[in-house]
Length: 448
Image (cartoon, rainbow, N blue to C red):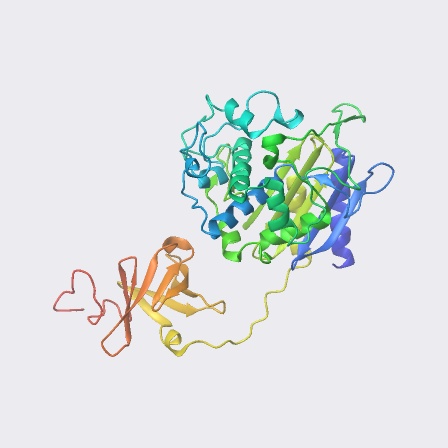
C-alpha cells in the first residue's frame, strides 16, 4: 500500500498496543485475496513477532467448524433443518436443528457444566453429553440469539461422526491444507506467543495456561498466524478456492439473528458474526481464550478485510482495531471497481430484458454479467431481487423480498414472453396487459 496508508495503519496499531498495554499485538489488512499490509508491536520473548508467529484464535475456530458442516450440507449428507438427533443420537437436546446450532439460536447453555472450560483440561464427548442431561437448554430453541460454546462442541462431534475421524483432521485435510494454512494447529508449534493476563493496576504480567479443551475444543482450540489468518479472512470475503462455493459462503454471511442485548449492530449468520458498521455489511468473528484475543472482519463488497491477534486476556479493543484498520485502508486507498467488459447474452434472454409491470408499477429486468438477472422497481425503492437460472424459463430468487421464490417466464402460443409469474404475482409488458393471465381478470371496459 502507499507509504501514507501504511503509516496510518501502523499508527493505529501502535496506539492500541500502547494504551491497551498489550504484551504484543499483530495485525494485517487483506485485499484481492492476499495480505497487503501487516504490522507488529510489542515483544514475544525478546523479539518482535512476525507474520509467522502463532497466537491462539479462540472462537474463530468456530468459523472453520461451520465451514466443515456446510461442506457436509453441500454434499447432501445433511440438511440445516435436520434435528440433531438424526445425525447425533443420544443427547438430551436432539430436537434442536443444525441451523440453530450454527446461528446460536438453539437455546443451549452457553458454557459446559462443571469447571470453567477454557481453563480446565477438557473431558471427552461422553462426559460432555452426560453433563448436559439436565438443564442443557436454557431458552426455547429458535426463540432468540444466545451464544453457545457448547453448541460448537456438539457441531465438532457431528463433523467427526460423519467423517469418521477427529474434527481437527477433517478441518486440516478439507479446509486448512487446500487453503495453504499450514501454520494453523490445535497446539502451538514453532514460534508462538505466550499468553498473559495484564494486571489492571500495574505493568506486570501473569502467564496464562492453555489446557486442551477436549470435547469443547471445536469452540476455541486453534492457533494460527497472520499469514494463515489472512488467507482465512480472504476466504470469508469470497476467495473460497475449492473449499466451498461462493454462494455457500455468502449464505453463511447472511444475517440469521441479531444480538439484541443493546441497540444492535451485530448478529449471526451460519457460523459467522455479521456486523453493520458505518453503512457497511461486514462478516467475520472474534475470539478470546485466557491469554489471547483475536478478530477477523471482511467487507465482501470492497474485498478489504482486517485481522488482529494479541497475547492478552483482556483490555485490547481488538474488534474496533480491526474495524478501524479496514475503514482506514478503504478510505485512504479505495479499491477500484472491477473493470467492465461486454459479454455475450443468449438472444432469448436478451428478449426478456426491459420494462415489466406488476399491476401499474413499472419494473426493469436486467441481465447481469455474472449470469444472473435482476428485477428492480423502475422508480424508488421496493421489492428488488436477483435471480439465478434453475431450468428452462425458470429462475430462483437469491436475495431481497423474493429470496428462494420461483420466477417463471410465461409465453404466448408463438413463443413470445408475455408475462412473468413470480410467486403468483403476474408481471406483464404493459400495465394489466389483457394478453397476460391476470388473476381475477380485467374490467371489460379497460382503462378509462
